[in-house]
Length: 426
Image 1 (cartoon, rainbow, N blue to C red):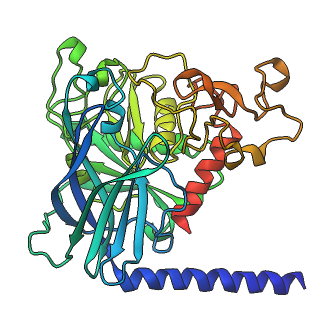
Image 2 (cartoon, rainbow, N blue to C red):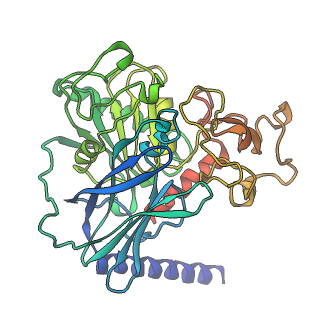
Image 3 (cartoon, one colour):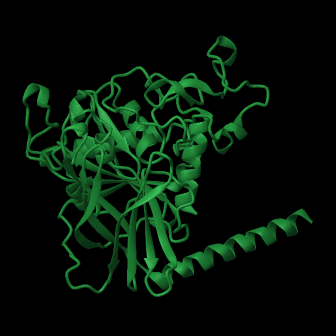
């Protein structure tokens, strides 16, 4: 009887996958449509503008999970069939712009930031709808526009003539996670070093759970985008370099915060390979990095803690995980509303904790959980996280989303990353 039930379930799962893939084939090409946007404003207001629409040759995402079921991100977009008003594709994401809006500077200055989003190339006319998540968790529309996929002004740019190497090949992009690493601050003569550095990063990532147990579902690519100079710009030393994406330390005046605002160049380079997440590897021994959900993750190659940092930043960029520390210097102010349950899967305000990692905890563990020896290695609800000491809670005393010294990800973070991998692969 058990064999029969298992067989029936397998048939049902296969049937659902085939049906979902049929939906993709009816509505999309296996290419990408990319919208280059400008987000502009200050602490009080923001607006979104279209810069350009582009057609890219690869679609690296799922052919079945087209609708976002995770609910992550400070922004959310829908691609809607114009003929019948049906949502065909949706995703959430975050931006450097939204982080900047929480800084002191945004109270007095207005700025504009590039932002890009991609989705499968539609076969028919669609409506693109972009919404921002407000502090109370509701959404506000920023941009709605119709798109004709046959529009002659959709740019079909030739891909850059960069070497593309598949560092770890576990299978087709349609049912695997594809991490694409792009070179930043590597000269043309340093590309052998870049590929070796990517292999080292990939091996390190796959040595930690849940990536280790899901290693057969993950591909790693390297796009060899050369720079004129080695390294990254450092405003504190008045060092301004000519590099592939013009990355820089001292973002928001935080020395260790390594970022790049030229998202368009990053996407142009990444388009050379199919990808689910973009990682930027910077050729320097300086400490720093950054990671923004469904945007990109960035880290350095040669600092003694470079691999630990990159694993942490991919936790942000790929897994949608929040920072669990609360004592380090940051530029953000009032990043979380304590009256609203945050969307990040690894922190809680206890407004709706049952939607988080409660199902993974022992029933005997108190909520909140005291930070004492008894619970040092237990999954709990420990106060302090998300940049604040009070009102935000994290799942472990120590985790890679809190410190580089942690042994790895806590069970709550592992669970969230595993769900993301499965969502992309299924």
